[in-house]
Image 1 (cartoon, rainbow, N blue to C red):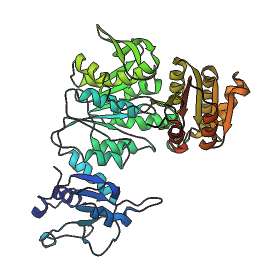
Image 2 (cartoon, rainbow, N blue to C red):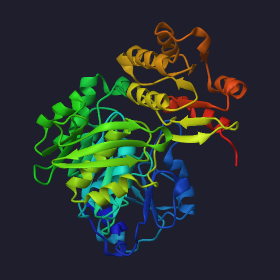
Image 3 (cartoon, rainbow, N blue to C red):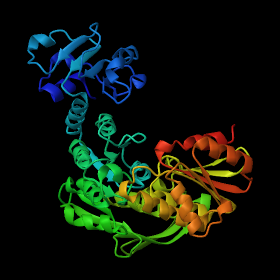
Image 4 (cartoon, rainbow, N blue to C red):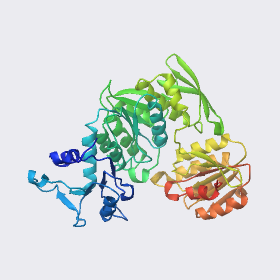
Length: 474
């Protein structure tokens, strides 16, 4: 278990004996989630500053706070920026504050230190679309044999990944860590903390292009994971053969390359993919001379790539087909896209976590597989940078083929409506709204029992409130 002595060692190189007995059971940057024995890391933010909540964290039971500015004088503070002597550690009382130059950097240093203490194989996952679902399914597959840790929720950045790493114990045998990219160099930083053995790349799209730059820059950023892998045989790069950007990354790693996809040239490939609507998908899996016929409860034909990634990692980590298939079929897999019932009995496809052109097209493909009047409620896709018009136009063209009714929310989403109308969708079938409440009001008045309603937009659009307003109450 992580102790206060470990934290001193990571941040100062000193290991006071009096700190060995104080176990740190958790790490958090949110004082509300601090529990007895937790470490609270006070981070400055755009709206709130964690230093203003150190008292709250201690009241909730935290034993330690990492700070970079002064806090209430009632708390004992050890300043690690200054030379310390054994006398400073004569009597350690808790709760205790450790003053550092940069609390985020300190969190990362402690996580990096702790990762090197734990003998565990790490699977890193990145990509523009599908990495969170891939993380969930891969962890479920590996847990059929191994004690497996994964990022909770979307803790995949320079804060969330170190917090996840600090949850590692010596009982863990595998860790599945999602790695997000917002700016070049970020994945390299995460890899320096996590030390991955296996790197999975889902695809290269245009999401976050506004911050990360061009698609070429995004591809370079994703490839940082592959450059961080150890050489073969310990290191393995799991790459999407169907994505030319990802396929080309094979030249950037010293690890063994394992391709997956729908092309027979891949090491693991699938064909005969059939969407079964809300009942999942069916396909044939090919690996060498082996052929498996599978049916799994994952929504949309695009989910076959998620299954291939998880199966590939399972094979690399030595699992049997029985274990892999059991993990893929597990009903406990947490998926982003879920189907819920509306107040009038209609089906709502809740895919409101985030949106990029690729993920919206995949959701529209699922909508096309279902029976009933198809209603697509699509919001702005944010952070597309120079690909903004192209991305919204592609979605609009596909929506014209799939949707009986198209509802757009937001200024950028009007480009979807314009493209759909130009592609042949009747203006009478298109509704354009400025905000979520207008869409909610329209749907409450016009939604029919046999409707299948897809709701999808970028996270910043908060379209989850549309689903919440329409969902049937118990």
